[in-house]
Image 1 (cartoon, rainbow, N blue to C red):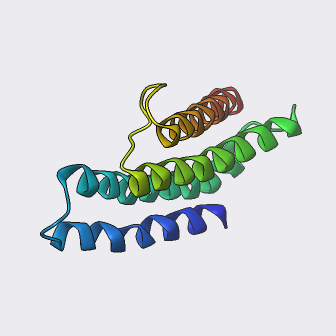
Image 2: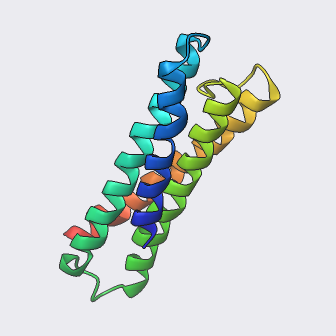
Length: 130
């Protein structure tokens, strides 16, 4: 379910990306920001669908809560990345370094939270796959 929603959001981000590509007034930064939003969110949705398909093969007998950590970490991370790339594309602030404008700082902290959640999911997934 969540993978499909994330994938759909990535598809929707293709519309502003296409408009920026076709626009004569769009800057390279605007085009790149929407390109990143479109492609990365589609990749995230595809990843969620793949993890969901593989879930039945994970070793979750010993710690059922590990399955919840895997699922919710990746789901939360995906939605945070959607928020981050959307903020970055709308404001043309990359959010890769702390500092700069307020929007850049907000985007940075959204990305940090997304990465931490993704790392938690990845570590839990490795443990569950053993």
